[in-house]
Amino acid sequence: VVVEAAVSAPEQAAASRPTASMSAMFLRMVCASVKYVAIVTTRDADLVPIRSSALSWRIMNAPNTGTVPLVAVVGYGRFGRALTDLLTSSGVPVRAFDTAAAVPEEIRSADLAELVEDADVVVVATPIPSTRATLNDLRPHLTADHLVIDVGSVKRAPMQALQDVLGSDIPWAATHPLFGPVNIARGDRPLRAVVCTNETHPGAVGRARNLYERIGCDV
Image 1 (spheres, rainbow, N blue to C red):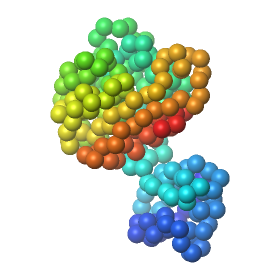
Image 2 (tube, one colour; image 1 turned 90 degrees about the horizontal axis):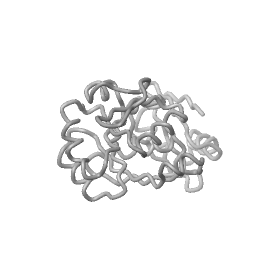
Image 3 (cartoon, rainbow, N blue to C red; image 1 turned 60 degrees about the vertical axis):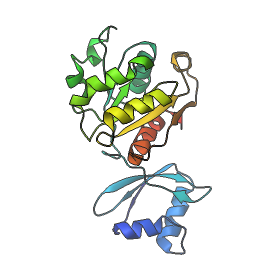
Image 4 (tube, helix red, strand yellow; image 1 turned 180 degrees about the vertical axis):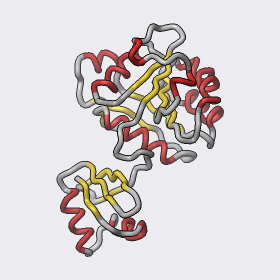
């Protein structure tokens, strides 16, 4: 649902709290039956996830809001293959790179530089012990426009590697998909995923959440 409103940013923020204003009442009425509302102002557009039962909203920070992100997957093992299939079936463009596994030609990148060029999200799907080395290899090719996420089943070591290698310069989020290739193959729904909080890059958390929700996950 798209709601057009020629309002300033402070007015948008005020409208996001329960008030007696007609605009707030209208938006709450609309939001009671939908999951996302794009509030289009004279300056930009923001994707606002709605929790209508609590009448609480929060703007998720994501570049290219409303567009489908291009996802680059590093690692084409069992989970990397399954994830690329899930992304593709969800209408998300994807490309992949692996130094050992055979990647289909239609999504294969020649190297890491080509892989991340113009990508919005970079998924590190290599084995957990190689997370730090993979991030070090990626680092020269990353910019502040990228979002880097891991998909490891443990979080302490990968989170430390993300912090050490990417720090405050490159947005990152530690995530844990609570599903595997078998769940994807047999069509289990809803899939579930955990996105860890990140005080260094709070906006990255929203971007990661948006990606998982786009592919059908409860987060």
